[in-house]
Image (cartoon, rainbow, N blue to C red; front, side, top):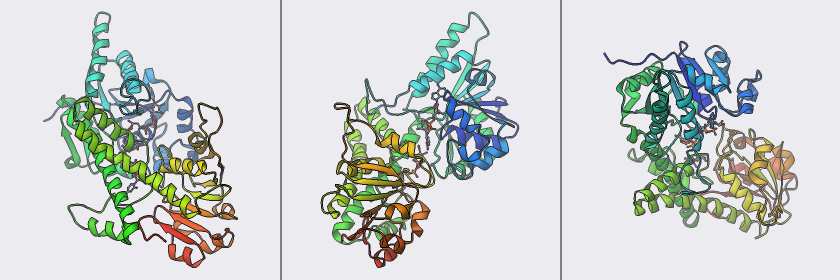
Length: 474
Ligand code: NAD
Ligand code: UGA
């Protein structure tokens, strides 16, 4: 029989989009384990602890229910990082790993300062044997760095107290925002990389509470770390591929939905991740491909780096291409024109706006002098402010001619507007009353649908000119 360490208490460092939902699912499925989610962000922890579950810091379908069932029973959100580490048998690292903005590797390499800081805290406060699990997405061989930090402290402490021991595992997270709870509850696979059999079995045992063992893959540490970057690179590559074909459709009268359907029925290609759109956004695809590119450069694999760079270049080109089309259709100038932006989150069913394509597209339109009204059912005004209101560092002036306002109602904002632009595929945009909208718009009035979700026939019959991504140009 395979042996494992008994796990009674878990700590997760980082109460973000991954830490919060992941630990909620573990706590729900493992009532005998106490789960502490610890973060340095006092406001974030306060939001996780709010009575009103509408105020949770992360919006995910199904999350409120899990929190309601487990919070303060075996799921705790806390700022007391030291105590959470001290009592834990297993610690998940779920901190942010953004792209470095300065120094060596700036613009490409991952900034591991939060991972390093967490490892130092673990080294300082852990007691007995502790399993450290990399949940964050990190460059290949980060487990080496973590091990070195843990070891350095262990050696220092040996003289004064009983030695601490550690096993480091890689257990990357594959959840998607908007479907996180379902992804965690029914994952395609759980990947565990490591060198310590007993530690691997201990983590596998936790997942086996609700996941069939055939879905739990065990690999070496480095394969596990690299598989996460590879999965995101492949997914992003499919989106850049389909978006490049959408542009060909527009000049040849092919229809991107028909092409995607036709190729997706080939079982070797498969039908997922073939939706053309305004480019991929979110906190991870760009950052993880940059990370992969940095690794390639580091190991002298120049051609491989160039290959993956193209995926990012097509993504930026897609955002700019859509902006250019809107400007051209509106007679080459947006000065003083009112445009209603529908959707600001990077995809539907999430309030996350990190690297949303809407940011770049809105900035492009603002530079042309547009008056934007931005509507999103889940994104708050302050979030949009953070993304759009940066100043020009040289002049301290806001360098854009345009202005934007937060919209509470699509129908109200549409009054006297020149165009509506769908940037996120929220379900409510499928059911817009185009007759009501069109009646109040300035003519010629446009609908630009970058997600192909609106009822275009109704929009056209209501008097709108309609541009759909990857379809005939009008
Ligand atoms: P996030 O920014 O939402 O959350 C990270 C949290 O870590 C923050 O609340 C921050 O305050 C906290 N933190 C940082 N340093 C800390 C420290 N020393 N002690 C305690 N708390 C600390 O990030 P996220 O979206 O949850 O992503 C976390 C990791 O998971 C990243 O590596 C990301 O690439 C990866 N990932 C994200 C997703 C996703 O959908 N967002 C999916 C899979 C993997
Ligand atoms: C993505 C991966 O799907 C997850 O497996 C991974 O865990 C996660 O990144 C991560 O590492 O952070 P996420 O970013 O939440 O998840 O969302 P996706 O559904 O992958 O969408 C990413 C972007 O691609 C969105 O802007 C979405 O609109 C766009 N997209 C997606 C398309 O344009 N077309 C598609 O067919 C699919």
